[in-house]
Amino acid sequence: MPTPAQKLEAKYKALVERFMKLPIIAKIGVSLGVFAALYALLMLASPFSCLINLVVPLVLLGVLWKLNIQSIKHLLVVGLLGSLVIAGLYADFATRYYLDLPAEVAGSEDGELFDGIVTPVYGTSETLYNFTVSVRLPNSTSVVTNMTVVVGDLRFYGGIGHNYTMSLAESESNETIAKYYNVTTVPHPLNLFVFWANIDGEWYIAGNQNPSSKSPLPTYGVEGPAYRDYGAIAAVMLPFGLYAGFVNIYPVFGILVLMVWWLKRARKMRIDSYQKSVAEREKDRAGVSKDEAKVPSLAKAMGAGGEDSFVCSECGADVPGEAKVCPKCGEKFD
Image (cartoon, rainbow, N blue to C red; front, side):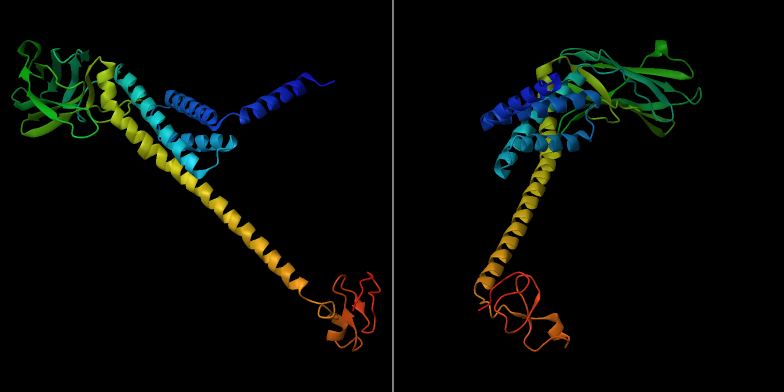
């Protein structure tokens, strides 16, 4: 009587056999589902990690191969579909990140500019955003000029920066710390900002000194402000997703497929060469008579045997020259 484990194994094998009989479209769908699930899990565990670009293509190829989808053309086409899936998932993850930005504060490396923030972080094209930053004055006679906040839109290519001159908040300033502000709207759904200032003839810049490790695009600029609009931000992130899918993922998958193709081709070449060699050897042996196949014995070659002895072509035994039958294996000679 089979054990529960054996019954479970039998059911599993039956399920696999039934699954392997499914149409190729169904197998491709399952492969892409596994591919998408793995990518999503890796993005949750380690967002936007470079290691994902290596692990995911390798797993996709392994799943396809296990499902007997081994045609090079099919593999490359499925890789393209997988890259589209990656583009969508990347854009979705990036959009969700920018809809829930962590609190970030701008500051200069030496601490002369600090507490640079924007409020509110989210709004619309009509929202008034208040940019503020504090300046540490070296002494009571220090002069601050060109106090500017630079707001640039975050996009795949051709981002535009806007310079806004900041005003001194006299009620919140003193001899050692001066606070500046600027209230403005922003025309783009997703932005970055930094602060510039000239203090006593020296330039200082304040940005994000500790970018978030979960950011799709960690930069020196502080992320924000942004519109709380999924569609608008997703449209900005889609080109980044396409880049991730077709530049980061697909070339790796393509290289793996080409490696498999070359290994299969090299193996076929070796097999063909071996079969050709065997066929030629059999052809040569078929055209040689028994008498021509007689090989001089080792004893005769060394001068120790009789003049008429030879070696049996079947078993290698020394046979007298006048013999018609090998004394060892019984092979007959003409």
